[in-house]
Image 1 (cartoon, rainbow, N blue to C red):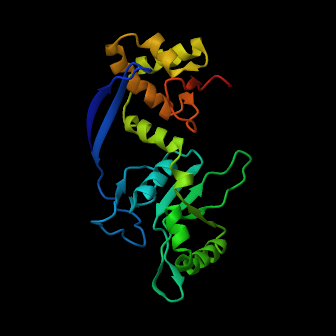
Image 2: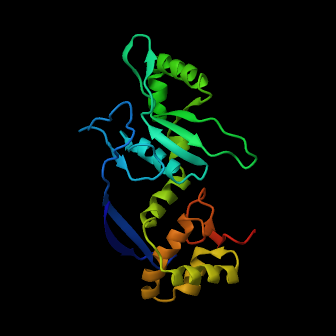
Image 3: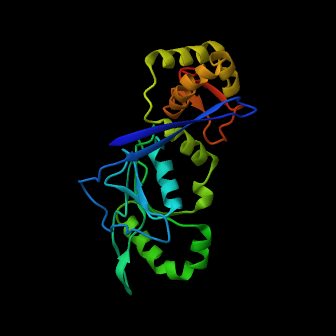
Length: 251
């Protein structure tokens, strides 16, 4: 995989400085198992392949909402694997059948219970509502197909996908390929362990008094938050007043 990094520095009145990393990458096509339906190129919608280690086969998408859902799956610790366009379901009167968007397999829960895999359709809520009659036979067949395999068929719309967590992950995943120097990781983690729970702004004030130190340490901080070595509640917007704490605080 070839990766190009571009760093852009933005100043903000609250955080003083924000370093954003834009990553351009090319991923070689996956040569293993492929989706049962190849997503065609579109000159109207948005199609593409998302870089991830979680998917079986290429993580292709044919809408921005599908891409956003794959981002959530990619960073969900409960997800074991996911596969796009995984099956073709026969539907009476539909020659090409029905191809749900994603099959999601989960890790067992802490008590050993195995959660059912989810066969998932991703669409805008308006699409589900306006075309409910057209989709009804496909969805009915999908529910039956899933139940026969001890899966569940679910529908996801933007209200369940485009959340504060998604916005946080879109920002943080830009730092996932950074490998912070061990000394920087130790410095940041030790600082927050000594300080205890604090806000991002407070940690920046303690550890990053200069613009030069911010350029060096902020990418490491975002990487540590993404990898849960420093903890933040990603279900809430990630801002300068967000509380963060050490992963070892409650051990």
